[in-house]
Amino acid sequence: MAELPNLPVCIRVQPAGLAIMNRGDKMDANWQRLVELLCRSQKLLIFTGAGISTASGIPDFRGPGGVWTRFRPVTWQEFLASHQARVAHWEYKLEGWTKFRDARPNAAHQAVVQLEQAGKVLLVVTQNIDGLHQMAGTSPEKLVELHGTNRWIECVRCGRRCAPEPVFEEFRQTRQPPRCFCGGWLKPATISFGQSLRPEDLEKAWEGARACDAVVALGSSLSVYPAADIPLMAARRGVPYAVINRGPTEHDGRPEVTLRLEGDVSVLFPETVRAALGPEAQTPPPTLH
Ligand SMILES: [Zn+2]
Image (cartoon, rainbow, N blue to C red; front, side, top):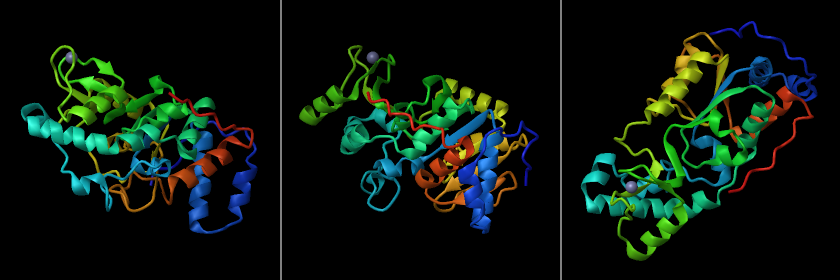
């Protein structure tokens, strides 16, 4: 197990953190260590997955009743090759669209913003396509959306981006795959199965993994690669690695994991950040677009 590095000690008093120490079981000892980790870190790499957004009403694609139990995901190659596949992809995206459109950030997204405002965040790397980190107020230059975003529609030929609402409306009426002015196919700006991650996003995430002083994975089963390699890459440099998730993760039991907390990140993480930053940390108002 990696030890906490010799970082500057926290200069803030932590009343909430002290209170939690009285609970006295292993979970709380780990929780206290996580508070300490956040307190000491000045260059956090925060890695997030679906579990951070379930409290915002974003459906779990893979769970029971999730859209992937009724729609087989269309691969990138199928989307490019077949009219039928393009229609199927748009049908699938249309079904989920209103939930994405109406979702708002929750306390965990806001806690990430509070850490950034306290000068502790090097980079936020998310697997999520819901745009909620940015909506909560995470700075775009500190955010990598590895699997793209549902908040934009993109042309697969010229790369032009446009707002989703009119394009979904067009598809709702015509049931024909929408096209760009250049003749290319339009597609929500998410990374499909079989599609390469954007090299600039991967490079920025790797850079974060090379430069961070601690890494925290929030709400991810850490089972989708290459995304899940990013926190591991950081941990292999010897920096502390904390995993908070409800349910098992692929990194459980690995020697790189310093701390493992089981639970709902939308409850656990804001409590941890409050304890690390002190009571003066304010909840930022969400930025609505
Ligand atoms: Zn185009």
